[in-house]
Length: 124
Image (cartoon, rainbow, N blue to C red; front, side, top):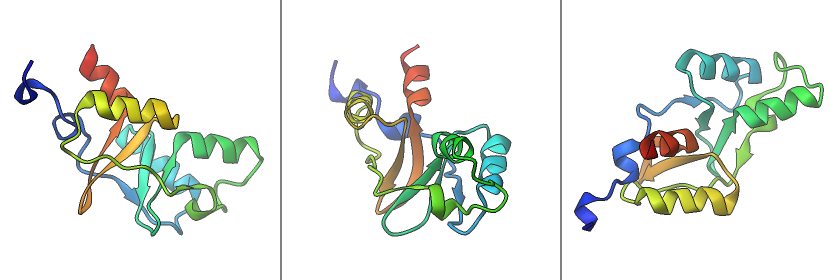
């Protein structure tokens, strides 16, 4: 198999990228995830951040009011990112190494999101 035959992140990533404001409520973020049938949203902050269904689940388990708590209170910061030209094997290894399910795809700016679900669908 040549490198030309190998699938890259860009071939599989989800676009357009769905984002949420850091001052949105966790409930608003959850509704947006449900509307788009996804499990994570990029929060355009520095450092880079996402809010995932796991972050929401932890907030609910802690008894936080998702209609009051803001995304910035529960989001995951300093997230790892993937380049669009990474091979699927490389991004799968990154997810395993870091114990994560979502990687924002960055090429100067955000261009998409790759998830463990995308990788599983690609390999099936």
